[in-house]
Image (cartoon, rainbow, N blue to C red):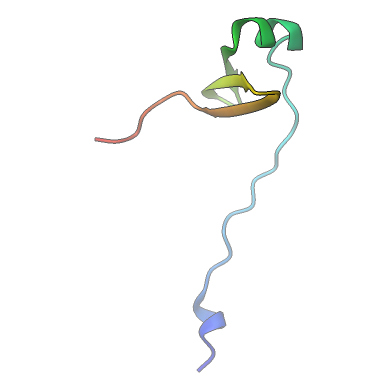
Amino acid sequence: MNLDDSVEEPEKKECSPVCVGKEDNIKKSGRMTAVVHDREVVIFYHKGEYHAMDIRCYRF
């Protein structure tokens, strides 16, 4: 029996760039929120890097 045959491929989603604001504004405030592909996200600028995550907490 080949175990690889029982593993399903994860759903592939298409991604496209989304403009959420000006770099200078994000850097100045350190964070901002935006709606990206119908989801509200928060974008952080920290130590020279941008990071984004879903703004909602799905934990019960």
